[in-house]
Image (cartoon, rainbow, N blue to C red):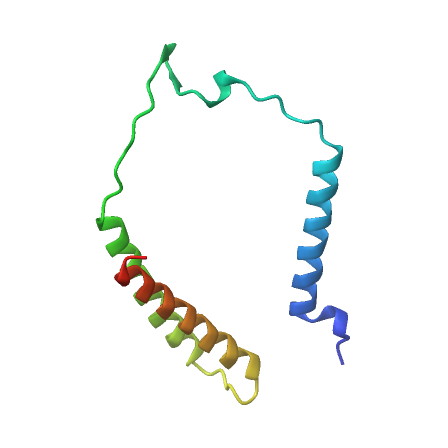
Length: 113
């Protein structure tokens, strides 16, 4: 019988906690960065360039919505192949949660939020 510490969820949570601790300790012991105007200005081939505002195409959002729909279909197909939700109840819960998140994001995307 496996112990509680070796379950994948506990290992994932412990690794996240270890990463957060390392990130916090690194932020405390690292020297502060010195901000300068040159670091934030655009530069190419020895010439200073004025900042240019670019518009985002709507086609990108159409591709994102299509990707989300196909992603949900692939997850549903992958989870329906031989995995019993009664044997592993966490799989069913994760699948339903994932599908709800994707459907909410699609509805927000189509609504224009």
